[in-house]
Length: 420
Image 1: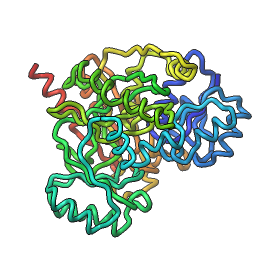
Image 2: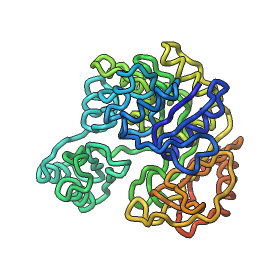
Image 3: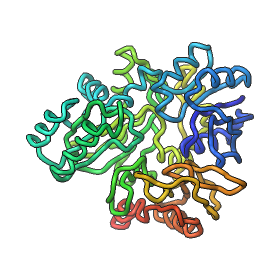
């Protein structure tokens, strides 16, 4: 069986790595992929927006399963196109992926199906937005309504921060069409949990939990990013907490989408805030999280190809998970998530079984940076503390002249574990 993965980042590298281990998979292609993943897949020089070319490639190569990694092609209807051609594809249709494509739609869906989340206000009018912020007070959260690559969110702790964010989105057009309107949300107190599930209609198969670190710098300082590192399991939360979130959030979201004619098939991601009143939704995504995929997939002992094919065939697969912990740290281009220089040389990269490349290229045989988040190194161990020690030991040999990474991934969880 041949598998095609659409995308080119760290999440897609992790997917390619996992599929390459399947006894059923003879070949893994990634379009466009990146130079760092060529040890597990063949990269196809084809843009993820080239729907015609990708469909033709899938037919010519007799691809058994196509998996869509990033959100942008999902929202441009790539799954709809593949399905119309009779090709087996894993990912939500354009209508179902709208749960990620519009934060206001997601909020309204949650309201209709009694899914717990914070209060919110949607507007495209700058003056109205400022008035609402002043009325509600801070802290408060400002979000561009559409896709902004994880960067369209400001958690404002001063009124000035909130108004600056509104100015950037609504007046300066920092996020283009994605910022045509804003969603202003209640600031939720608590600790975050990333919870993903394999979904096909009403069937929801939850994965183990993970915790991402969104801020660029240590001690959760600096601007929001796409994610600077993650770990799993999350010992702060019990299995009962996870089960409740599946029952009260993931299941009603999947069933609600189906009931509204938006049948969801793919990975449903819930970014949750675990508050004193229980889990509340911060955001929904319509695909594997990045970097969560690079942390979760090394813990998955089941054959990913079999899991997805069973799900698409209407079966309910049982997932097997490693008891070991996995912790991963992102190395990013200096300047990220703001402006950064590309094509900077990386002269040394640590060896690891769980090294996943993202914003990387090769020029004259030399690895160079090509994006904000460049690579992620994960390690697996019986405890989070041991996994963290292994990761940071490996990172010491990374050529970090043009890269930076957080030094505190997993610290809070490890500290709490030491107290118990």
